[in-house]
Image 1 (tube, protein in one colour):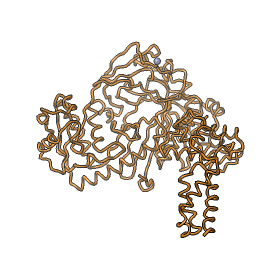
Image 2: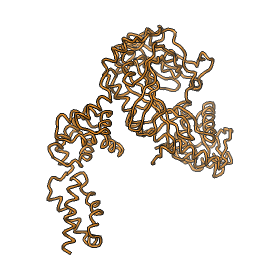
Image 3: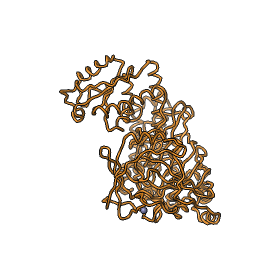
Image 4: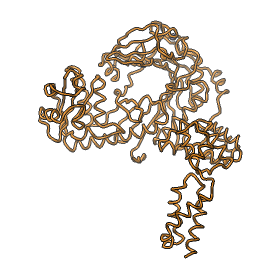
Length: 627
Ligand SMILES: [Zn+2]
């Protein structure tokens, strides 16, 4: 679906969390390495309750979490201490972590404050033993330049990473304490992002800036992104936990589509005068002799509600692989209950007849939908009530909420958006002064900035402003330098285009270009520099290498059948021309254009387009001259 970004009024912002590679944790002297097998030395349980903030309010996200009444089990190790257990107060802020954060702040053109104050941010999902996460604001008012415009960087905070969730069983959630307390920088941009592509680029640039310090952790799970998305007439939605940079554009697009679809559904429901009945019926009797495994597993307990005028709505797709019914199911899942509805039934071993009897219980017509959950009464009622609240909301507006990123670029409901009542001062940690001397010292050792690199590329490689800008901000900038230094006869423009545009296009096609390593590019450019193939074949070769990364480039050239044999090329073109002589006589010299399309279909990527065009023109001329 093509998105008109201007029309929909996209406003998006990013929040990036990056683990720092410090020697010790943020508030204690424990190491910042993760335990491989999670074989704990001890464990202890906690129950958390939503406490009030200083203003006397209870955060809504915290209140909702409390309803699930969970037990948290924490696993500790030799490499964790009483600070992680919340049995000893935190120590002073880690100086090394402060210095790295300040370096990042300066690279983002931010203004550091004079003093660092540690605050408490309430978390009640159990991810911290003390019920809050400690965070400290270090700098504000930065910016990032992109081709699409300036994006303000509002804040940079230094915080402690949360404990890692390792298992869930019923109402018990297991957390591992090795990750708790690893220093993180949290960088938040203003909602200045206007397209999905720009979101990806901003994330990429932030990632590069962080890595350029050489002091951040690398690898899966060390960087996590959250995205805020809102559109005109929609709602502000936060999507959490994106680990794959490549997905960011996709996630923004899918959220836009979800909100547009929800707006459509809302209008349709209002037009139909749809309404919700709060009558929850016990439907268990209908399923006395059922063969549905889902229902048998729930002891035959089935409860349902009727949604008047909702037929067809629940089955409407709103994101890849997700229907409106999936949105409702997210709420039931929170209570550990699966949800089924008449837009998808009969299914799950439930028969046509059972569906009919369900509908009859509610006197449901063809326009209505019935939603059921299989669980004992109390849990079923709680789940259905949550579902009904969501359904009623759908008829009014798109709800503001926090969602969880799914691996395919869609997202699922997680909890309401947290309010502003979440922070209060951490009195156990003394404030730290940021003195001028320290800033000067950090400033004098900063890695090369984009601007400096850009100027250097213009001078050294003769790139124009646009291309110099593009490659200096691209993750592949050092690869570009390496290739240019090794193969001086290659045009810098071509190398830049390959490492930026070509890769972006392949990514759009769904080709997993992140599988390519530097050596693949270096080998490809080496062969190109020695004229082993035409530059048009670069995409074909890269695609081939994605699928067969162990194959050498010269072998790839052979396998793809890149034609170095010009006789074969001439014959192929001659054959096509000879089969179209009528067309050529009718069109005259103007036949070349359409024929070029036909020939390119066969030879694209294999032979230089200019060469093909020249041969084709000659052959057409021959036909016309022969009469
Ligand atoms: Zn510790």
